[in-house]
Image (cartoon, rainbow over all chains, first blue to last red; front, side):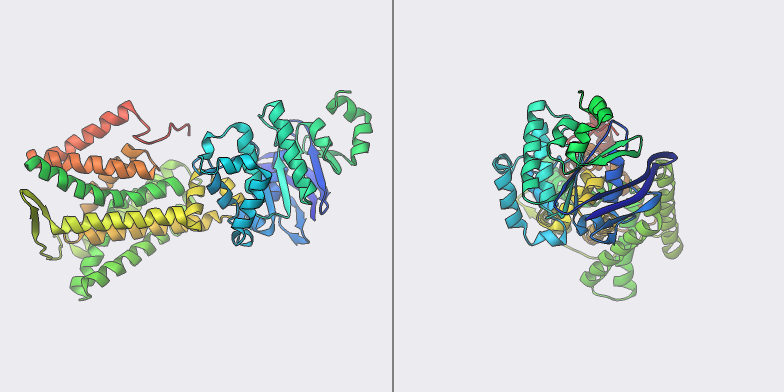
Length: 234
Length: 286
């Protein structure tokens, strides 16, 4: 579904990504883990159109999307849940969901999508008229995920969904991601929390200093000795 | 009674100011430019209505509609030609470029029309309720401004484009992720800003006569209101417009226009010193 071929990207003069190539298959959950500053968020920015790559190609449903503006990428069916959620603080919960369905594809199905999303996240239904800026950290993350679902995406990308959240809330967030996975969505999950994301993965990728150091299944990932030591604390 | 009259007229004046600053606030909040030639755009609007009505013999209402359209176009053009390229530049570049537009507009009008005051002779009666006196033109301007402000509010809150505009004002990167074309929203916002100025020009036509330096004082008062209310905050600007309107008229009634303005500016300074972000502004960490 998503093919990334030899993507390199920089912020100004500083090169972040070096020749990254990876794939996300339809219906699967691809996980990208790595330490701080490895380039995980940068890769998501390149895919979603917020950052132009220096070189390389990205194909989504066999169409090139590298270099496209973010609204075009969104319209094609890729939805990003940014780090920290980044919900619109002055909008109510309902307005956040409404803006999530801005894409032409999703606009006509506002009612149905809202019902589906409230079914998954009943707390959001209780708070539908509440101003989003007054929600707690976990509720905001939930809202951000719900907002992404509103656009009827083909691929959902999560940027460090556990970031800044208390451990108990992290458990809840990953439960929701699991539910979304079970509904058949294609997912690209970028995380620092290896232990939690490993449980959901079909394909695992490890990125360090802008380069892919490992690609493989969950079993291979767990069995790899260096990874065991560095990331799983075993 | 004189005081009550002054307050009522202040409210009428405030209503029009409220519509005037709506455009300025919107453009600051969404496109994040400081629209230095705002008063001059209003001046151009008044000149255009004059030209259409007096030189081209077009009926007044039609002239006003045409002017709204032309101002909409002018503002959009300035965006595409000037502002767009400066969005990521230093603020000083933005300031100088837009200040240049201001000078161009003023001097262009002076070259075409000379320094004489141009006005359209429209005589509307003075009305009174008991001892309370106010002019019909002020009343029409007030009611009209509130109507348009209400329409604008509905537009912002009930339509998808209005939602998109408010989203871009809060977080334009994430707005892009939602599928909103930020560049188009900028253009829509600038067009709306121009159109709103045109509408105010229409209401001002029976009240004011225009001359090449007419713009300056309106730019100043618009900025003061916008900052007083909290830059980018539409409700704040609305409230601040009435505060300034009432104070200006009230003080002017008992002394003169200049003192009225001075007192307004002093109150503005006072509030800003105590609360720099304005009445409803959020504490900004830019």
